[in-house]
Image 1 (tube, rainbow, N blue to C red):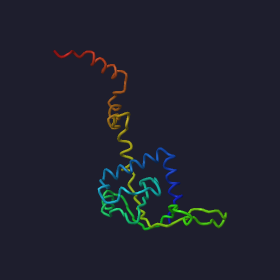
Image 2 (cartoon, rainbow, N blue to C red):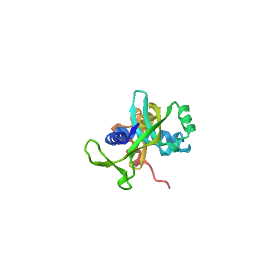
Image 3 (cartoon, helix red, strand yellow):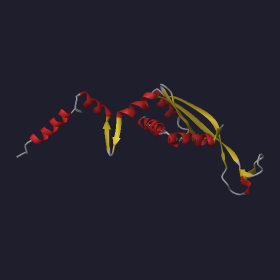
Image 4 (cartoon, rainbow, N blue to C red):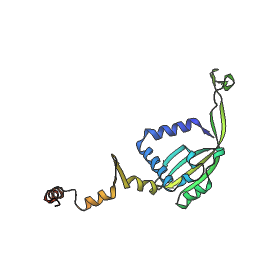
Length: 182
């Protein structure tokens, strides 16, 4: 059974660490690159647990309302790319919508009124993705302002010695030596 407090804790952990948030963004980008959102209901998932980062794998558990099970064809697409996907039926325990006095119950420990908790059936989809999907994308491009910089190009420039003062002076001299077109 999933408790709503577990979800809040997971989200708090995600937002408290920029690196974890970046990993989740790359995880989602991989879903997008694999065209997973073409399949029914995959867009409706909510993070319940994760990401759990291991040496070779990243694990994220997503929750879907029971009547909105994500299309298994989408899971097969992930499996075809090396991911592991499991579906599990579960129950979400959450606060009922407050409609009046009948929406409350007495807390046996304190004697005070509290909102009733209800249980709703859900699907939990655990996706275990090879880490290289996230690592490759995280290091391949960096955004600076409105420009995307390919880090492979930067590495190549360093390898060619284009970061030296002589190279910079040579480029400046090349620009001044150019004759205007007539």
